[in-house]
Image (cartoon, rainbow, N blue to C red; front, side, top):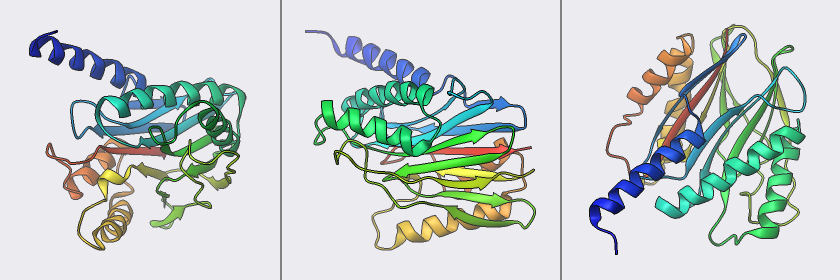
Length: 249
């Protein structure tokens, strides 16, 4: 039987692997578009994930996504690894986010136990030439779209499909938005807005939208930092927290 030090070392190495799979960098740039993200696990390992893929079936497209695997710790992290592999595979073959989610859900429900493995996802396919972002979601929070020209925010939402891995044959819907100069899209996991008190989650969601409207004209990295400060995200969290901002320069 290994020592506590051995266990801590293994957990530390596992965390490094997880973080490298989620996204090697907290920022990504492609032409006019930039992605900035921050993640904080509630424990040594977690189940939140996000990513940017460029090897999509059409040239000039980016896949940007965020998700949250059910559970915590080692089991959630192992599930997250499987999700990253499935999403990368799907992004190579499908442009439509709803097709990506349908494919991933089919593989999961055919091969995995929903009791132990299910996840929410918000997935965007961005045409970098036209600026049109097509999006779909599976059990995930809506995104927030900041329109720089008006200074206003609106939800990017579709019919809220089920969590992936739960319902065989589930269908998902696509939505579309054109990203213009200065626009931002804010994606987040529920750990940033959920609180145990009744009604607090809805109030924090509204507060996040207000803060995006207030600070939306900031540079991408500055916006991420400001939102985390406003939400009071710190080192003591009881659920994984992830925030991602996609911006158009």
